Image 1 (cartoon, one colour):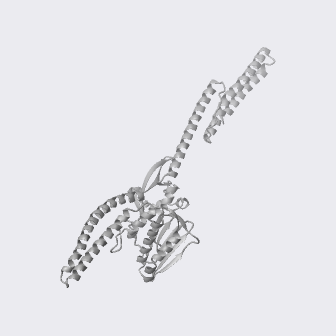
Image 2 (spheres, rainbow, N blue to C red; image 1 turned 45 degrees about the vertical axis):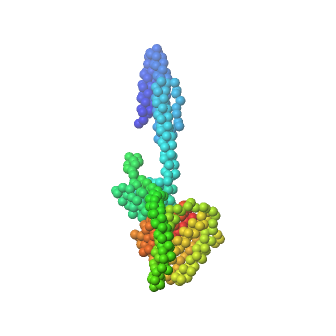
Image 3 (cartoon, rainbow, N blue to C red; image 1 turned 120 degrees about the vertical axis):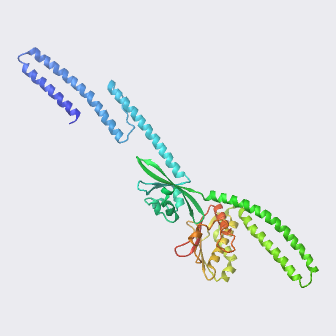
Length: 432
């Protein structure tokens, strides 16, 4: 039974008693009857006023409670001129103003945080209470190479490739460094926050590729410049002296002259080879900024095929061209990209050896180039070191071919990968 019903029941009983008393004295005591009637009238008037005074606050409280329940902080009450009611209304209006300000502030902070997460260059994976991916920003989609629809609902350990292995034990082992195909390098860090009284986790992914490349270039640039300066100075002087020794050949006995001349030529040749060796390293650190212009990639591929035609025929390798219809025009430096394509194809031919196949494919949407070969596959332990400067699996390799390709493509902001696919072919993919 509500308080209002109890009040009405009590008032009804009181007035019923007064009416019964008035009915009993109506004929025996007229003055008392008139007094009772006046008292009954006054009681009814006071009851109505009291009812309004009690019920109206209840109505205001009910309306205010409902507004708070539905989170409608725009409804406020106007003072009615009654001191108690006006105090209640003033307290309610002040509370509503505070709630509205806090909600607006909270929404602004949430919107700012959401905007920062979406615009952040660092990838963010927001995990649910059971450890599944609940939110992902565009940077994380780009780093993981998967759209948000495929990431939501998965556990970090279920992600493909090296990501799943690196993120599986992230919470207990601290930050992890993830290196993909020897090119992209990332740092993954797990942290926690409190949501509705419970602990949740999020994973922060930071790309370190460009910073590491800049640091390594600064390191080996100083070393190469110093070596180049010292070796070239010495080689120049030594070759000059060796060339002068040719004038003494006629002074020797005829039987000794051929050996003497051959020894000088071999020494000069080895010095020249050493100078060229150092020059290759120097060219790596002197790579200029690309001079980009609209270029047909198909024409560059045809040029590369013509340059390698003799080598392809000698090794009995089948060159398969599967080019997209029309021209594939990309804004790039044609000289630098031609050098990169030449190095890529040479590496593919060396991997094939003889009697193999090389496929060159392009597509327009999205614009990309794929160079495949059916030569020897890339071992997993080599995969992560492919684009490391001076690393080579060849006996006489200098380890700068893939590094030069990497630097050229990175300067063009082209993404790329080199890996052995499930079909056994090794593919170099460039995404323009």
